[in-house]
Length: 111
Image (tube, rainbow, N blue to C red; front, top):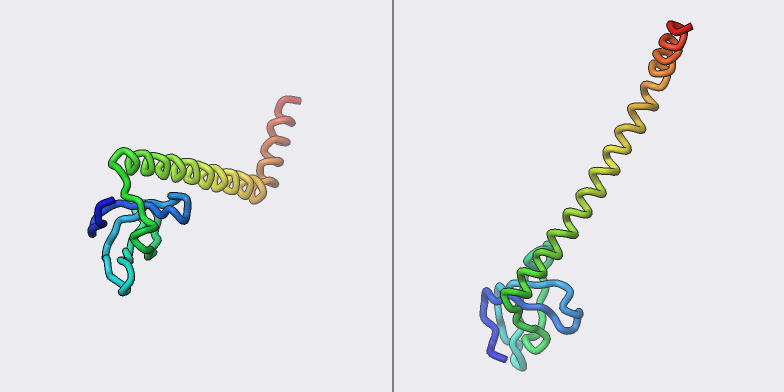
């Protein structure tokens, strides 16, 4: 494998390639090169020895970003749905008496 350089997109073997990172700095600890990295889709910073990192292809980066985007959409939809349910529930609770009176008035007008 070629030596990593600042700007490369990598994944950590030791974490099962779970998060992709951009290399922002490389230093040596005397024995090996250590990369400082920032997550490309998550707010995370980490460092790892170069031997633990695998350079990612453009295709792997596209697939990873698509997967992250899909997950973000799913979470957003879930949050929006829960907010709407909360609003409906609270509206009904806050206005239950008026709603009941309105239905009763309408029912009486039919009798």
